[in-house]
Length: 485
Image (cartoon, rainbow, N blue to C red; front, side):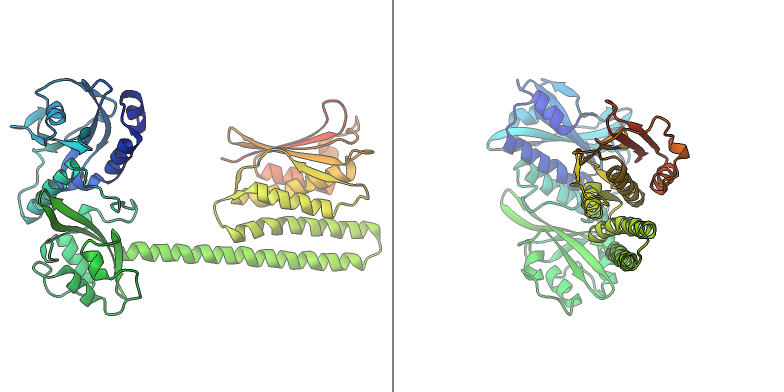
């Protein structure tokens, strides 16, 4: 299905400010769809004004859909009797005279022109499935009355206001709980879910006929300092959403100022009990902090082990034993680098370029050669899963160390590390410019501990490892390919 931006770019001449306004409207029009129990389609005029294009669509969560199919990308040609054309030409909200049949279902349709700067920049067409209309009652009447006011605000480009920006995963929806508040702050209607939310906060009286700010403040006996008083917020001043909290319950309120042709008519207040959501967030934060602390302690312990190995190597005179301890110290240090990165920003993946650059500096510092050595990275590792990062760090360390110790020739003190990601694979080449491999060399028969470690780790990761001479029979190329999916 086409996106809103694609339809507008391809078929309209709307300016950036008009497009920004329509984007904002589409981001918040779910409120109108739920209040009106209607599917909404946004039509935009084409370049020649004789064709209208559907660029966005939303279905209600409070009732059945009236549109089984997606219509984004479809067009309506000029028809003076069509409600979209009539709304565009008249600049007025157009209602149908009777129910239309759509796929055998009676559907009530009306069109709301979005008038901005004296021009119609879009038409919101509302389709209401009359077969599934809920039985009339106080809740349905309150919804439809609020929808009528909101439709007028959409028509005059008064909704959504700049502050009307919801947070999809936490902001209250109509079904979570709704209160209708007069301009003087008195509650004229409270949905059952809204009453239940206030009951959980400790309310024993009724909400209807009471001052919302006064009732809410009475339930919050102790509050931390805030930039603006809750009373002013609930009267529609300042911030758009606010959270109120008792020792046992946390409630998120969304305040939408309503107004008609004559001026302000109060607020629509949506409420959602976010107690469980916030509890889960706190648990996740605690878990995240705990995992970071574990990585930090593992890093410290590994650095302690590396320091002990370093002390032990200084007290050994046998070159072979000293080299073995230095190799062990280097491997422990490589693992410690990964845990240090994870302790700073725990995530399911690691930006491995930072790890690689630290490892290359460490390998150069402990290189067992008197010749000048340079390790240069060309390309990016990208993001690597955290469970792959530790093994990959050891593989990279061993290959670089092996290239320095065995692959550098006279006046050839550069080792290149060339990583890249391609089709879900991470490919890393470690290239030196020293002597090529002996003709009789076979990787499987090598007794090198470093190469054995690399082979084992790469196999565990489901990857491939090859070691070959350079293309010009100069130097060697160690190539590792690891699946990241």
